[in-house]
Length: 631
Image 1 (tube, rainbow, N blue to C red):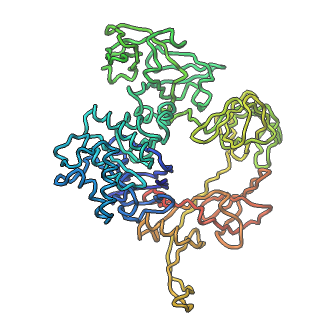
Image 2 (image 1 turned 120 degrees about the vertical axis):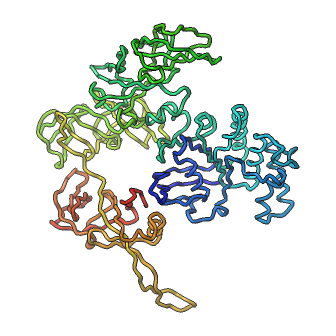
Image 3 (image 1 turned 90 degrees about the horizontal axis):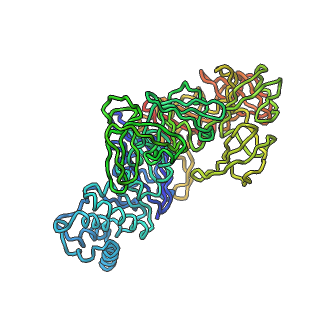
């Protein structure tokens, strides 16, 4: 049994094509993980990198905390089931299943026991003397599974194993593989392009597109909380309905308007409590999504009603799918109409073509996406919340509290829009806030806090009591103040970037050889950044060489770090202090290093020039040529 860690995994081919981009995931022991996505999204390539059949361009793959990037496939203790079964046609089922064990020179009695145990689990004991050509597709699939499980591997990899089966057999085999996972209690990683397989089998699903991970979550959460339009449309049958539209807030209501239709609905602001408020001014285009089952042909089902013109009806036995259009005058082909809608209706429903019907919508299940990026504007953990604030001297009147402003924040007196990131809200402080709700978001405790008329969000690790008032604090270095659309106070930049290179050189070191201390020559590595040199640990250098190749030396690298990963010392980068920002509990110096500006956490006063020492092992290192992360 095993857990896996995929840390910033890339696959870049010699022609520059990136098949997999920055894949990061922790897979726990005994999980059933499904990689799903359209053809060419990188799911099988990722599986083959785990198996060792594809070389990892950059990143680190760990199985049970052991780095296996350079470990041969046969030594990784994994087993793989291929799409085409890959059975030996001249061998019997028994011989196919025993073949790998014989190569490992296991005793004959142990081989026989393992084969017969696996055959019993899979229900193919009576076929052990048959050859593959005398078996059905489903039986051959069981043999391929049996050949994998006799090895009792740490990890089972399955690459679209059901794609060659008919629909009925696929359904049966889905159930069989899920039962097998439960019996074996080992880690399964399964690749498919079929979202139904993914939803019914996986404990967690990785949705991929164009080499990028779109979202990793449980089947239920993917369905209910898609992170972008692609995930929303890919997961679920039929596909989610999408409409271009706008959202306009007026008081405690938000008007939801579908473009090119008469649909205009007023919904309570509570439905949009996690939405980015900048999208509620009616000027920013959004994509609105709602699933077929959240639209009812019963106009009394939900309080939000609209009319649509029926195109056709599909009877599916358990229910009907009504295809219609919210644009009552649309002349587009229904499949191409941007205002088309699919509605799930009760079985036996009948509607004549071109008839106009009234439907009702469950707007609590409405999804909102940015029209350009197609990412959700209402994530499960909101990035920030906007509230109104008044500056009066050194005081900030906001969140129903008087907040003392630090020296670093001294805007003119007046009214401002204050943007408060979720990461800036913490428990323990001086601001009163009522605990409205607590929810688990993939292991993180998100609490909803009402301070004055504003609902804030915070990730907490302490117990809070629902309905009770607690004390919170705001990290003021993270807030942003705007007036008339212009940013007046920027948050402190916590992302420093410097450019440099890695070099190698020979050094003499003393080592004990045959009981005597001798000087031997070894390779050493260093980072050369803006005229300063920093020792690079050999393990880190190997990661960079593995990802960038031997020609990594001399290439431009980006070194990224926070103000907390650099400190003022006696040696290091030479910097000129450009400004200091005092936030009360913390003080930061902005230093000019080369042609870059770097923020540094400092204690006390600093001179005009400083030396900056980097925490080398905490650096995030990127190769600029291919735009990939190496460490």
